[in-house]
Length: 235
Image (cartoon, rainbow, N blue to C red; front, side):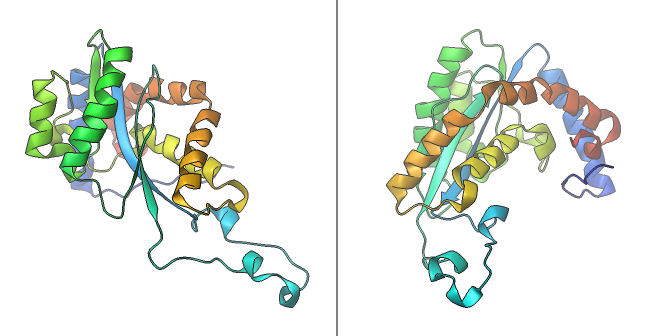
């Protein structure tokens, strides 16, 4: 008996497109290491974590409000975490208070210049890498593409980048694991600084060998998607 795995739903036309894109990615990535970046957002509390939704009591009337209720500010502070990962290492985290999606100026100046470039110089100086961003608008803005080309960063072109293929992007698993550690046992932060410290300490608890093994399988999963469609890349 096996549990069902989560997967995006694809139309027949989307499956055809994804298969073609995966084939092109495989050709372009031959003899190269994938470098992935992404950002995720963290709030002081995490309501969707299963452990944060339930509590146990023998008498609900005697249960303290802070146990049976989830208090939420109307405009709760939010932290954006940006990180770069390859099979060789995890970059230092970039944390920024944010209420909206990242824009191209922040992405270029703080993320690409501040995190990606030093990461590439330190761990991928041989130049044998292929940068795979997701398809957020800031990631493919004209200024962003100019920056990547100017700095000789080989990247997946937008037309070759599948719109929704998390099963082949292990950085998605990384963020899921990190979120579980940060909000373990219903943990909540009292303020943004406490949340920052928690995120940084939680990153150090992640076993890099597990992350690394997931990155080693990127090309295997892309091949499965290219041969038989994106559902075959689900693990």
